[in-house]
Image 1 (spheres, rainbow, N blue to C red):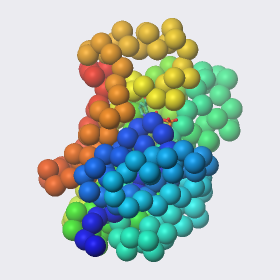
Image 2: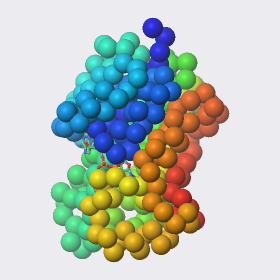
Image 3: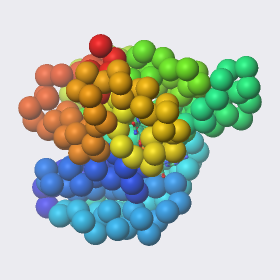
Length: 242
Ligand SMILES: NC(=O)c1ccc[n+]([C@@H]2O[C@H](COP(=O)([O-])OP(=O)(O)OC[C@H]3O[C@@H](n4cnc5c(N)ncnc54)[C@H](O)[C@@H]3O)[C@@H](O)[C@H]2O)c1
């Protein structure tokens, strides 16, 4: 009855799925949201060891985000942890970038986090340990050729994280970002092999990261051990941005 609840966006696969499983392992009931592949999200939910709720929709739509939070409260009566993980890339050099490619990335990666935080905050403030964890990127710290839209969204998330942490700290809510480097998922799987190799050559630990390695950082930030950490960016990049 007293279990805390966590909402993870983009939980149908990749880093989001790993976060959902890790937070479930840590004892949270989980709301898994996805863009449209409900069957995939249900499969992840079936591997969770706590209660789950699967919701679908576009996190770039403020009404959808509001509804996800309302349905979370309806089902679990509380929301303690929000993980803004849903994200996409539309990589191309700036000279070729369309308005749509820029808008799409900003709307999903940055506006989505804004919409969800705005709807979730009043419940997070009621939690004994409210947490927001925004999944940024090494690109938002160091920039990356062909990713001006993506890097802007991820750098924006860092400024958003720090500002919000200052707004809600007195209400006991911590707000942090995790900045993954090169993690093996469908997103990086779509990148040409020669680009992958050139990035991996710059990783201090000389290998790609695994989704569980990002999820364990998220689990740490969601837990009691991170109660005095806020407004921070935790890089999980094997030393890529050093
Ligand atoms: N994989 C990496 O190397 C890496 C590195 C740095 C940051 N990240 C970030 O980590 C997060 C997860 O990345 P991933 O590699 O697991 O990607 P992925 O493409 O495997 O998964 C992305 C998830 O976001 C969801 N999503 C996309 N657009 C959405 C929308 N409009 N509304 C709702 N959900 C939507 C998808 O359904 C999917 O579940 C992203 O924010 C990404 O930018 C990934």
